[in-house]
Amino acid sequence: MNYYSTNDSAAEMSFKEAVIKGLPHDKGLFFPKEIPSLPASFFEQLPSLSLPAIAFEVLQPFVAPDITAEDLQKICDEVFTFPIPLVEVEKNIYSLELFHGPTCAFKDVGARFMSRCLQAFAEPDRPVTVLVATSGDTGSAVANGFLGLENIDVVVVYPQLGVSEIQEMQFTTLGQNTSAVGIEGTFDDCQALVKQAFSDEELNQKKNLSSANSINVARWLPQMVYYFHAWGQWKNLNPEAEEVTIAVPSGNFGNLAAGLLARQMGLPVTYFVAATNRNKIVPDYLETGVYTPASSVCTIANAMDVGSPNNFPRIQELFGDDLEALQKVVKGFWVDDEKIKSTIKLVHQENGYMLDPHGAIGYLSLQQLLPDLKTPGIFLETAHPAKFKKSMEEVLGQEIELPEQLKVFKGRQKQVTDMPNDFAGFKMLLMQEHKEGTL
Ligand SMILES: *Cc1c(COP(=O)(O)O)cnc(C)c1O
Image (cartoon, rainbow, N blue to C red; front, side, top):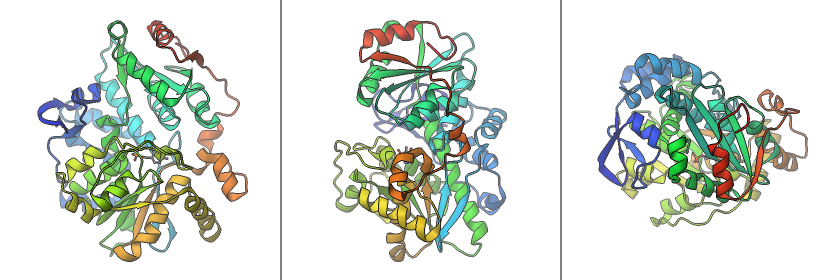
């Protein structure tokens, strides 16, 4: 498969080039040249297929010929090792639990898949250093996704005071080929340092730098897999049912763009909901036709605090910039923090189901929109509630137990290089040879 830039359909690149480059020069996004249709036989078998088997069928055309069928099978077997169950919350509303991976968030899927692709492309005598700036979740998913891989080092750059304790433990205690740099500054400062590193000539001569940005095609495409898996499970539970709506709690809109791509490949989803917190750029656009990026505002669903969603051009591309066509399929919805909190509380009381702040937005969107849409609904539960222990405990007024994946970090030794927000020092650190767990 070749990929073009959403800003210039003439310039094409292979999958390998698109993964390594991450972003086209013209600041567009890589987009597949063709969108294959999956055969009816695939959908008939889907309810009984395993996750790795679905992943192989769905992703094969997108990675060939750069990744061989044999390598892809191996990658899918290694990536999709945890369950992604569909759980009934109440009549006609189901939760797709994407939080059973190593860092308890859906980003595990993309980060793990991308790590194996980069490894398949790495040259043995030129190890790759992956630089990732994070405000919390991305750093842990990427560091865990790449952990233990040969020929690749990961450096997580984060604001010393800007991440939760659990998040910090998830990327500062792993060691091996991962290391962490705590910056005296904000997330934006971290992002600026990483950006400057990519444009520093001397550094790039010495090191083979790569980014694990969320817009990389190798992080974006594998997210399609769980939409197919969700539909298969839903068919198992409702063999007669035809129509279904999927609600996607969204920030940068990579996850929703993947769902819409799956639909284009033939997945029979009737509607999608673009569900957001108060950062409601896309719901506003769906309502008014005017797209106005803004500064992000802080909410309790903080992984979705995005004012300028970087994957949105992919959604526009999928619908050929046709607003009416988009509106027919994608319904907008947004809520404020108070409503998120009361929803978490109510669903916990009434249904005994614990929503996290992000999933709660998806749930609520279904509860409000399904009577009009007249279909059952599935929402994506994008992270484990315990990742937001403090706010969850405030809302529910009870202690929340950590899942096993998060418990193991307690009491581990942090290994961090703390430094001021200063590029010269940051560069010097990166220029040094890598030693286990440190730079
Ligand atoms: C990243 C993230 C989202 C938003 O996903 P996008 O693909 O950026 O729209 C939602 N929920 C959680 C928990 C996340 O970590």
